[in-house]
Amino acid sequence: MSGVRYDATKFNYIARATANVPVHMVWHTAPATSIEEIKKHEVITGGVGTTGTHADLPRAQNALIGTKWKVIGGYKGNDESRIAMERGEVQAAISPAILFNEQLRPWLEQRKVKVVVQYADFRHPTLPDVPAVTELTNNEEAKAVFRFLVSLSTLGRSYAAPPGVPAETVVMLRTAVQAMLNDPAFKADAQKRGADLLPMSGDELGAYIKQIMATPPAIVNKTNEVIAAR
Image (cartoon, rainbow, N blue to C red; front, side, top):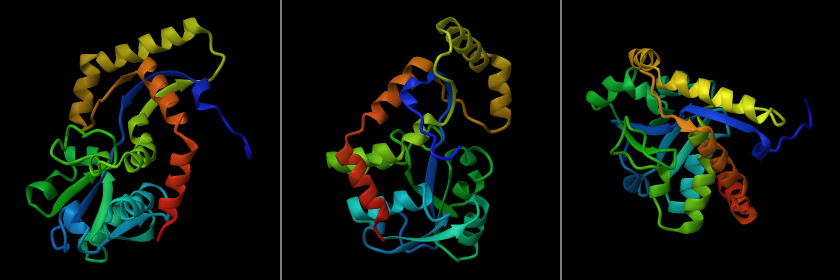
């Protein structure tokens, strides 16, 4: 509905099944294969659409830490941007970390790509040696901007109930979802499918939402400034 606004802190958070961490990979023929090298050499990256993670995070890095990402947007999906990278149209692309469990693991093993940064405030267990974007600077303002930008990664695949749901119903939902996430058969099926499970409790999730919603206006303004830069 047009014009509808919600207060995220008023929802009842049930649980998170897993995070959703995008990672930036560069093709083996790119002129740079690390963030430090990308501060010296331009790397062309394909973006899905013209805004969002594929465009905002590279531009924020350019503005805050001096990288030289060049964003070519307009691709319709992750598959298209990856194909563009394979055929030399661009030199880098962003994909979910989970794909390196199965689908994209051969690229890592054959050294066709190198993952240079994770767009989260933690390291995904599939890629423990790859830094999170929040680790790329010691500047507190820059860190705060990156934390704000990657908050969707932490939210990931979460469950929530609307405001006004009775407390006993929230407890019942939390108990049921937690039982599902702890179920050995459910875990085995996730592993078989190459999926990951990085659960977070409803209380932890609610606290995280409040923390993000309390981001100072100065950081929000700075975020808008750096993602608008070209």
